[in-house]
Length: 465
Image (cartoon, rainbow, N blue to C red):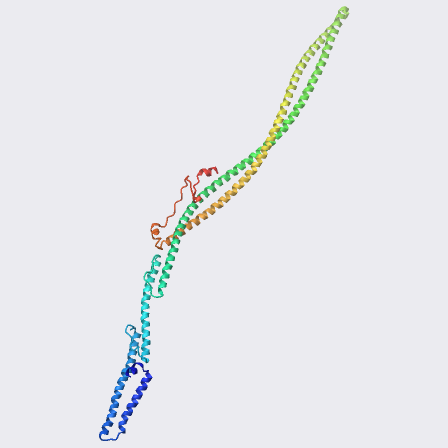
Protein backbone atom coordinates (compact mmCIF):
# COMPACT_ATOMS: atom_id res chain seq x y z
CA UNK A 1 0.00 0.00 0.00
CA UNK A 2 2.68 2.48 1.00
CA UNK A 3 4.88 1.38 -1.95
CA UNK A 4 1.99 1.97 -4.33
CA UNK A 5 1.31 5.34 -2.71
CA UNK A 6 4.95 6.29 -2.86
CA UNK A 7 5.97 4.93 -6.28
CA UNK A 8 2.88 4.38 -8.39
CA UNK A 9 0.11 6.73 -7.29
CA UNK A 10 -0.16 9.91 -9.33
CA UNK A 11 0.17 13.18 -7.47
CA UNK A 12 -3.53 13.88 -7.75
CA UNK A 13 -4.41 10.52 -6.22
CA UNK A 14 -1.87 11.20 -3.50
CA UNK A 15 -3.48 14.55 -2.77
CA UNK A 16 -6.94 13.01 -2.90
CA UNK A 17 -5.77 10.31 -0.48
CA UNK A 18 -4.32 12.92 1.87
CA UNK A 19 -7.55 14.86 1.66
CA UNK A 20 -9.54 11.75 2.54
CA UNK A 21 -7.18 10.89 5.39
CA UNK A 22 -7.37 14.44 6.64
CA UNK A 23 -11.15 14.34 6.44
CA UNK A 24 -11.14 11.03 8.28
CA UNK A 25 -8.90 12.41 11.01
CA UNK A 26 -11.07 15.50 11.29
CA UNK A 27 -14.09 13.26 11.64
CA UNK A 28 -12.20 11.16 14.14
CA UNK A 29 -11.33 14.21 16.20
CA UNK A 30 -14.92 15.39 15.96
CA UNK A 31 -16.19 12.02 17.10
CA UNK A 32 -14.95 12.72 20.62
CA UNK A 33 -17.02 15.86 20.77
CA UNK A 34 -20.14 13.90 20.03
CA UNK A 35 -19.66 11.64 23.02
CA UNK A 36 -21.29 12.67 26.33
CA UNK A 37 -19.08 14.25 28.91
CA UNK A 38 -18.02 12.64 32.02
CA UNK A 39 -16.25 9.57 33.15
CA UNK A 40 -14.91 7.27 30.55
CA UNK A 41 -16.56 9.15 27.78
CA UNK A 42 -14.54 12.19 28.58
CA UNK A 43 -11.34 10.18 28.40
CA UNK A 44 -12.42 8.64 25.15
CA UNK A 45 -13.41 12.03 23.83
CA UNK A 46 -9.91 13.28 24.59
CA UNK A 47 -8.28 10.21 23.07
CA UNK A 48 -9.88 10.69 19.66
CA UNK A 49 -8.53 14.19 19.06
CA UNK A 50 -5.12 13.20 20.38
CA UNK A 51 -5.14 10.16 18.16
CA UNK A 52 -6.21 12.28 15.25
CA UNK A 53 -3.37 14.70 15.91
CA UNK A 54 -0.84 11.87 16.17
CA UNK A 55 -2.17 10.26 13.07
CA UNK A 56 -2.14 13.63 11.31
CA UNK A 57 1.49 14.09 12.28
CA UNK A 58 2.34 10.62 11.06
CA UNK A 59 0.40 11.20 7.85
CA UNK A 60 2.14 14.54 7.28
CA UNK A 61 5.51 12.99 8.00
CA UNK A 62 4.76 10.14 5.62
CA UNK A 63 3.42 12.60 3.04
CA UNK A 64 6.56 14.66 3.40
CA UNK A 65 8.74 11.57 2.92
CA UNK A 66 6.66 10.09 0.15
CA UNK A 67 5.62 13.25 -1.70
CA UNK A 68 7.80 16.26 -0.84
CA UNK A 69 11.17 14.57 -0.37
CA UNK A 70 11.14 12.94 -3.84
CA UNK A 71 10.20 16.25 -5.43
CA UNK A 72 12.88 18.14 -3.48
CA UNK A 73 15.46 15.46 -4.27
CA UNK A 74 14.41 15.57 -7.91
CA UNK A 75 14.73 19.36 -8.00
CA UNK A 76 18.17 19.20 -6.36
CA UNK A 77 19.28 16.50 -8.81
CA UNK A 78 17.90 18.48 -11.71
CA UNK A 79 19.83 21.53 -10.56
CA UNK A 80 22.97 19.38 -10.26
CA UNK A 81 22.31 18.03 -13.73
CA UNK A 82 21.94 21.56 -14.99
CA UNK A 83 25.20 22.43 -13.23
CA UNK A 84 26.97 19.66 -15.16
CA UNK A 85 26.82 16.73 -12.79
CA UNK A 86 26.14 13.97 -15.24
CA UNK A 87 28.13 11.30 -13.44
CA UNK A 88 25.76 10.86 -10.47
CA UNK A 89 22.87 8.50 -11.18
CA UNK A 90 19.27 9.64 -11.39
CA UNK A 91 17.17 7.91 -8.71
CA UNK A 92 13.44 7.09 -8.59
CA UNK A 93 13.31 6.30 -12.31
CA UNK A 94 11.10 3.36 -11.35
CA UNK A 95 8.41 5.65 -9.98
CA UNK A 96 5.22 5.88 -11.99
CA UNK A 97 4.18 9.26 -10.71
CA UNK A 98 5.35 12.68 -11.81
CA UNK A 99 8.59 12.23 -9.88
CA UNK A 100 9.28 9.08 -11.86
CA UNK A 101 8.45 10.84 -15.08
CA UNK A 102 10.73 13.74 -14.16
CA UNK A 103 13.44 11.28 -13.06
CA UNK A 104 13.21 9.36 -16.29
CA UNK A 105 13.26 12.59 -18.29
CA UNK A 106 16.26 13.81 -16.27
CA UNK A 107 17.92 10.44 -16.77
CA UNK A 108 17.39 10.81 -20.48
CA UNK A 109 18.93 14.27 -20.26
CA UNK A 110 21.84 12.79 -18.27
CA UNK A 111 22.33 9.97 -20.75
CA UNK A 112 22.21 12.47 -23.59
CA UNK A 113 24.70 14.67 -21.74
CA UNK A 114 26.94 11.66 -21.14
CA UNK A 115 26.62 10.70 -24.79
CA UNK A 116 27.27 14.31 -25.74
CA UNK A 117 30.33 14.42 -23.51
CA UNK A 118 31.55 11.15 -24.94
CA UNK A 119 30.75 12.43 -28.41
CA UNK A 120 32.57 15.67 -27.62
CA UNK A 121 35.59 13.72 -26.41
CA UNK A 122 35.50 11.56 -29.49
CA UNK A 123 34.97 14.67 -31.59
CA UNK A 124 37.94 16.33 -29.90
CA UNK A 125 40.01 13.27 -30.72
CA UNK A 126 38.70 13.39 -34.29
CA UNK A 127 39.39 17.13 -34.53
CA UNK A 128 42.88 16.56 -33.13
CA UNK A 129 43.52 13.79 -35.67
CA UNK A 130 42.09 15.87 -38.51
CA UNK A 131 44.03 18.95 -37.32
CA UNK A 132 47.25 16.93 -37.30
CA UNK A 133 46.42 15.58 -40.75
CA UNK A 134 45.58 19.04 -42.07
CA UNK A 135 48.80 20.41 -40.58
CA UNK A 136 50.75 17.66 -42.33
CA UNK A 137 48.81 18.42 -45.51
CA UNK A 138 49.58 22.13 -45.12
CA UNK A 139 53.26 21.21 -44.76
CA UNK A 140 53.01 19.25 -48.01
CA UNK A 141 53.15 15.75 -46.52
CA UNK A 142 50.64 13.82 -48.59
CA UNK A 143 51.81 10.49 -47.17
CA UNK A 144 50.21 11.13 -43.77
CA UNK A 145 47.24 8.89 -42.89
CA UNK A 146 44.81 8.94 -39.96
CA UNK A 147 45.43 5.59 -38.26
CA UNK A 148 43.19 5.89 -35.18
CA UNK A 149 39.69 4.62 -36.02
CA UNK A 150 36.83 7.07 -35.62
CA UNK A 151 33.72 6.00 -33.69
CA UNK A 152 30.49 5.16 -35.40
CA UNK A 153 29.65 6.78 -38.66
CA UNK A 154 32.69 9.07 -38.41
CA UNK A 155 34.84 6.14 -39.49
CA UNK A 156 33.58 6.77 -43.01
CA UNK A 157 34.99 10.30 -42.72
CA UNK A 158 38.43 8.90 -41.79
CA UNK A 159 38.25 6.38 -44.63
CA UNK A 160 37.18 9.05 -47.12
CA UNK A 161 39.87 11.45 -45.87
CA UNK A 162 42.61 8.82 -46.21
CA UNK A 163 41.29 7.83 -49.64
CA UNK A 164 41.23 11.49 -50.71
CA UNK A 165 44.80 11.95 -49.47
CA UNK A 166 45.85 8.80 -51.32
CA UNK A 167 44.26 10.03 -54.55
CA UNK A 168 45.72 13.49 -53.99
CA UNK A 169 49.15 11.96 -53.35
CA UNK A 170 48.84 9.89 -56.52
CA UNK A 171 47.71 12.89 -58.54
CA UNK A 172 50.42 15.08 -57.02
CA UNK A 173 52.98 12.38 -57.77
CA UNK A 174 51.88 12.43 -61.39
CA UNK A 175 51.97 16.24 -61.30
CA UNK A 176 55.51 16.11 -59.86
CA UNK A 177 56.59 13.64 -62.55
CA UNK A 178 54.88 15.76 -65.21
CA UNK A 179 56.51 18.87 -63.76
CA UNK A 180 59.90 17.19 -63.88
CA UNK A 181 59.24 16.17 -67.48
CA UNK A 182 58.03 19.68 -68.32
CA UNK A 183 61.10 21.15 -66.62
CA UNK A 184 63.41 18.86 -68.57
CA UNK A 185 61.52 19.46 -71.82
CA UNK A 186 61.39 23.20 -71.30
CA UNK A 187 65.12 23.22 -70.57
CA UNK A 188 65.73 21.30 -73.81
CA UNK A 189 63.34 23.62 -75.66
CA UNK A 190 65.18 26.60 -74.20
CA UNK A 191 68.55 25.16 -75.24
CA UNK A 192 67.15 24.28 -78.68
CA UNK A 193 65.64 27.74 -78.99
CA UNK A 194 68.96 29.32 -78.05
CA UNK A 195 70.78 27.17 -80.61
CA UNK A 196 68.07 27.85 -83.20
CA UNK A 197 68.23 31.56 -82.45
CA UNK A 198 72.00 31.55 -82.92
CA UNK A 199 71.76 29.54 -86.12
CA UNK A 200 68.90 31.69 -87.38
CA UNK A 201 70.90 34.82 -86.68
CA UNK A 202 73.88 33.28 -88.50
CA UNK A 203 71.61 32.21 -91.35
CA UNK A 204 70.10 35.68 -91.52
CA UNK A 205 73.57 37.24 -91.61
CA UNK A 206 74.72 34.77 -94.28
CA UNK A 207 71.54 35.33 -96.29
CA UNK A 208 72.02 39.06 -96.00
CA UNK A 209 75.57 38.66 -97.28
CA UNK A 210 74.34 36.30 -100.00
CA UNK A 211 71.62 38.78 -100.93
CA UNK A 212 74.17 41.59 -101.16
CA UNK A 213 76.52 39.35 -103.18
CA UNK A 214 73.62 38.26 -105.40
CA UNK A 215 72.67 41.88 -105.98
CA UNK A 216 76.27 42.64 -106.91
CA UNK A 217 76.35 39.60 -109.21
CA UNK A 218 73.03 40.68 -110.72
CA UNK A 219 74.43 44.17 -111.25
CA UNK A 220 77.60 42.76 -112.81
CA UNK A 221 75.61 40.39 -115.01
CA UNK A 222 73.40 43.31 -116.02
CA UNK A 223 76.49 45.31 -116.91
CA UNK A 224 77.91 42.28 -118.75
CA UNK A 225 74.61 41.90 -120.59
CA UNK A 226 74.75 45.57 -121.57
CA UNK A 227 78.37 45.15 -122.63
CA UNK A 228 77.48 42.03 -124.64
CA UNK A 229 74.68 44.02 -126.25
CA UNK A 230 77.17 46.74 -127.12
CA UNK A 231 79.57 44.08 -128.44
CA UNK A 232 76.74 42.62 -130.52
CA UNK A 233 75.98 46.07 -131.86
CA UNK A 234 79.71 46.64 -132.57
CA UNK A 235 80.01 43.22 -134.24
CA UNK A 236 76.93 43.99 -136.32
CA UNK A 237 78.47 47.30 -137.31
CA UNK A 238 81.78 45.52 -138.05
CA UNK A 239 79.87 42.97 -140.09
CA UNK A 240 78.25 45.78 -142.07
CA UNK A 241 81.56 47.59 -142.46
CA UNK A 242 83.24 44.33 -143.53
CA UNK A 243 80.47 43.81 -146.06
CA UNK A 244 80.97 47.38 -147.25
CA UNK A 245 84.74 46.72 -147.37
CA UNK A 246 84.07 43.66 -149.53
CA UNK A 247 82.01 45.83 -151.85
CA UNK A 248 84.80 48.42 -151.96
CA UNK A 249 87.36 45.71 -152.67
CA UNK A 250 85.15 44.37 -155.44
CA UNK A 251 84.99 47.87 -156.91
CA UNK A 252 88.76 48.19 -156.53
CA UNK A 253 89.19 44.88 -158.35
CA UNK A 254 86.93 46.16 -161.09
CA UNK A 255 88.88 49.46 -161.20
CA UNK A 256 92.22 47.60 -161.31
CA UNK A 257 90.83 45.42 -164.07
CA UNK A 258 89.81 48.57 -165.95
CA UNK A 259 93.30 50.03 -165.34
CA UNK A 260 94.82 46.80 -166.65
CA UNK A 261 92.67 47.01 -169.72
CA UNK A 262 93.60 50.69 -170.14
CA UNK A 263 97.29 49.76 -169.77
CA UNK A 264 96.91 47.16 -172.47
CA UNK A 265 95.25 49.79 -174.70
CA UNK A 266 98.10 52.22 -173.91
CA UNK A 267 100.61 49.47 -174.77
CA UNK A 268 98.94 49.03 -178.09
CA UNK A 269 99.03 52.80 -178.63
CA UNK A 270 102.72 52.79 -177.63
CA UNK A 271 103.31 50.01 -180.14
CA UNK A 272 101.61 52.14 -182.77
CA UNK A 273 103.74 55.14 -181.74
CA UNK A 274 106.87 52.95 -181.86
CA UNK A 275 105.87 51.83 -185.37
CA UNK A 276 105.26 55.44 -186.35
CA UNK A 277 108.70 56.39 -184.96
CA UNK A 278 110.29 53.52 -186.87
CA UNK A 279 108.55 54.61 -190.06
CA UNK A 280 109.53 58.22 -189.37
CA UNK A 281 113.15 57.12 -188.87
CA UNK A 282 113.05 55.23 -192.14
CA UNK A 283 111.52 58.22 -193.85
CA UNK A 284 114.19 60.49 -192.33
CA UNK A 285 116.87 58.05 -193.41
CA UNK A 286 115.49 57.99 -196.93
CA UNK A 287 115.21 61.78 -196.84
CA UNK A 288 118.88 62.03 -195.81
CA UNK A 289 119.89 59.70 -198.58
CA UNK A 290 117.92 61.74 -201.05
CA UNK A 291 119.38 64.96 -199.64
CA UNK A 292 122.86 63.57 -199.99
CA UNK A 293 122.13 62.76 -203.54
CA UNK A 294 120.89 66.25 -204.10
CA UNK A 295 124.14 67.83 -203.02
CA UNK A 296 124.19 71.41 -201.87
CA UNK A 297 120.60 71.93 -202.66
CA UNK A 298 119.58 69.10 -200.39
CA UNK A 299 121.89 70.01 -197.48
CA UNK A 300 119.18 71.87 -195.60
CA UNK A 301 116.76 69.12 -196.17
CA UNK A 302 119.41 66.69 -194.96
CA UNK A 303 119.70 68.68 -191.72
CA UNK A 304 115.95 68.55 -191.32
CA UNK A 305 115.98 64.88 -192.11
CA UNK A 306 118.69 64.38 -189.50
CA UNK A 307 116.66 66.25 -186.87
CA UNK A 308 113.55 64.33 -187.82
CA UNK A 309 115.49 61.10 -187.55
CA UNK A 310 116.88 62.15 -184.16
CA UNK A 311 113.37 63.10 -183.09
CA UNK A 312 112.08 59.77 -184.36
CA UNK A 313 114.80 57.96 -182.47
CA UNK A 314 113.97 59.91 -179.29
CA UNK A 315 110.30 59.18 -179.86
CA UNK A 316 111.09 55.53 -180.32
CA UNK A 317 113.28 55.60 -177.21
CA UNK A 318 110.56 57.40 -175.25
CA UNK A 319 107.91 55.04 -176.59
CA UNK A 320 110.11 52.10 -175.66
CA UNK A 321 110.64 53.52 -172.16
CA UNK A 322 106.92 54.26 -171.85
CA UNK A 323 106.21 50.75 -173.04
CA UNK A 324 108.59 49.37 -170.46
CA UNK A 325 106.93 51.52 -167.78
CA UNK A 326 103.51 50.49 -168.96
CA UNK A 327 104.64 46.86 -169.01
CA UNK A 328 105.98 47.27 -165.50
CA UNK A 329 102.81 49.12 -164.49
CA UNK A 330 100.73 46.40 -166.09
CA UNK A 331 102.63 43.80 -164.07
CA UNK A 332 102.07 45.81 -160.93
CA UNK A 333 98.44 46.28 -161.84
CA UNK A 334 98.07 42.55 -162.46
CA UNK A 335 99.76 41.86 -159.12
CA UNK A 336 97.52 44.49 -157.48
CA UNK A 337 94.47 42.93 -159.08
CA UNK A 338 95.57 39.55 -157.76
CA UNK A 339 96.22 40.99 -154.27
CA UNK A 340 92.92 42.87 -154.32
CA UNK A 341 91.18 39.66 -155.40
CA UNK A 342 92.87 37.82 -152.56
CA UNK A 343 91.92 40.70 -150.24
CA UNK A 344 88.32 40.43 -151.43
CA UNK A 345 88.39 36.69 -150.77
CA UNK A 346 89.84 37.27 -147.30
CA UNK A 347 87.22 39.94 -146.67
CA UNK A 348 84.51 37.50 -147.76
CA UNK A 349 85.89 34.97 -145.26
CA UNK A 350 86.08 37.73 -142.65
CA UNK A 351 82.49 38.75 -143.39
CA UNK A 352 81.42 35.11 -143.01
CA UNK A 353 83.34 34.77 -139.74
CA UNK A 354 81.97 38.08 -138.53
CA UNK A 355 78.47 36.86 -139.41
CA UNK A 356 79.11 33.68 -137.39
CA UNK A 357 80.54 35.75 -134.53
CA UNK A 358 77.52 38.06 -134.76
CA UNK A 359 75.20 35.04 -134.53
CA UNK A 360 77.15 33.70 -131.54
CA UNK A 361 77.18 37.13 -129.91
CA UNK A 362 73.42 37.41 -130.45
CA UNK A 363 73.02 34.02 -128.73
CA UNK A 364 75.32 35.18 -125.94
CA UNK A 365 73.30 38.39 -125.68
CA UNK A 366 70.05 36.46 -125.39
CA UNK A 367 71.62 34.10 -122.83
CA UNK A 368 73.04 37.05 -120.91
CA UNK A 369 69.64 38.75 -120.93
CA UNK A 370 67.95 35.54 -119.74
CA UNK A 371 70.66 35.08 -117.10
CA UNK A 372 70.21 38.68 -116.03
CA UNK A 373 66.45 38.15 -115.78
CA UNK A 374 66.89 34.86 -113.92
CA UNK A 375 69.48 36.42 -111.62
CA UNK A 376 67.07 39.28 -110.98
CA UNK A 377 64.42 36.74 -110.02
CA UNK A 378 66.95 34.81 -107.90
CA UNK A 379 68.04 38.07 -106.30
CA UNK A 380 64.41 38.90 -105.55
CA UNK A 381 63.91 35.40 -104.14
CA UNK A 382 67.04 35.72 -102.01
CA UNK A 383 65.86 39.13 -100.82
CA UNK A 384 62.48 37.59 -99.97
CA UNK A 385 64.28 34.73 -98.18
CA UNK A 386 66.37 37.32 -96.36
CA UNK A 387 63.21 39.15 -95.29
CA UNK A 388 61.52 35.91 -94.25
CA UNK A 389 64.67 34.84 -92.40
CA UNK A 390 64.71 38.16 -90.58
CA UNK A 391 61.07 37.59 -89.65
CA UNK A 392 61.91 34.03 -88.62
CA UNK A 393 64.78 35.38 -86.54
CA UNK A 394 62.38 37.76 -84.81
CA UNK A 395 59.91 34.91 -84.26
CA UNK A 396 62.73 32.71 -82.96
CA UNK A 397 63.69 35.48 -80.54
CA UNK A 398 60.07 35.59 -79.36
CA UNK A 399 59.98 31.79 -79.14
CA UNK A 400 63.27 31.83 -77.23
CA UNK A 401 61.88 34.39 -74.79
CA UNK A 402 58.71 32.29 -74.43
CA UNK A 403 60.82 29.15 -73.92
CA UNK A 404 62.89 30.88 -71.27
CA UNK A 405 59.71 32.08 -69.56
CA UNK A 406 58.30 28.55 -69.79
CA UNK A 407 61.51 27.12 -68.32
CA UNK A 408 61.41 29.65 -65.48
CA UNK A 409 57.74 28.89 -64.78
CA UNK A 410 58.47 25.15 -64.95
CA UNK A 411 61.31 25.55 -62.45
CA UNK A 412 59.05 27.59 -60.19
CA UNK A 413 56.31 24.97 -60.54
CA UNK A 414 58.78 22.22 -59.77
CA UNK A 415 60.03 24.16 -56.77
CA UNK A 416 56.42 24.45 -55.60
CA UNK A 417 55.71 20.75 -56.15
CA UNK A 418 58.83 19.72 -54.23
CA UNK A 419 57.02 20.92 -51.09
CA UNK A 420 54.68 17.95 -51.34
CA UNK A 421 55.78 14.56 -50.06
CA UNK A 422 53.87 11.69 -51.58
CA UNK A 423 55.86 8.85 -50.06
CA UNK A 424 56.90 7.47 -53.43
CA UNK A 425 58.53 10.75 -54.40
CA UNK A 426 60.43 11.50 -51.18
CA UNK A 427 63.59 9.86 -52.45
CA UNK A 428 63.15 11.53 -55.81
CA UNK A 429 62.72 14.93 -54.14
CA UNK A 430 65.78 14.33 -52.01
CA UNK A 431 67.77 13.19 -55.01
CA UNK A 432 66.54 15.68 -57.58
CA UNK A 433 66.98 19.34 -56.85
CA UNK A 434 65.66 22.06 -59.09
CA UNK A 435 68.07 22.07 -62.07
CA UNK A 436 69.96 25.18 -62.87
CA UNK A 437 69.81 26.73 -66.30
CA UNK A 438 71.56 24.43 -68.71
CA UNK A 439 74.48 25.87 -70.63
CA UNK A 440 74.17 26.10 -74.36
CA UNK A 441 75.32 22.98 -76.07
CA UNK A 442 78.51 23.22 -77.99
CA UNK A 443 78.06 22.50 -81.64
CA UNK A 444 80.36 19.60 -82.30
CA UNK A 445 80.46 17.41 -85.42
CA UNK A 446 78.75 14.47 -83.70
CA UNK A 447 75.74 12.45 -84.85
CA UNK A 448 72.59 13.51 -83.06
CA UNK A 449 69.44 11.48 -82.56
CA UNK A 450 66.21 12.56 -80.96
CA UNK A 451 65.63 16.29 -80.99
CA UNK A 452 66.95 17.41 -84.38
CA UNK A 453 66.69 21.03 -83.32
CA UNK A 454 69.82 20.41 -81.25
CA UNK A 455 71.77 18.92 -84.16
CA UNK A 456 75.08 20.75 -84.54
CA UNK A 457 75.75 22.48 -87.81
CA UNK A 458 79.28 23.24 -88.92
CA UNK A 459 80.31 26.49 -90.50
CA UNK A 460 81.23 24.65 -93.70
CA UNK A 461 77.55 23.93 -94.41
CA UNK A 462 76.78 27.65 -94.25
CA UNK A 463 79.86 28.42 -96.30
CA UNK A 464 78.47 26.18 -99.04
CA UNK A 465 75.15 27.99 -98.74
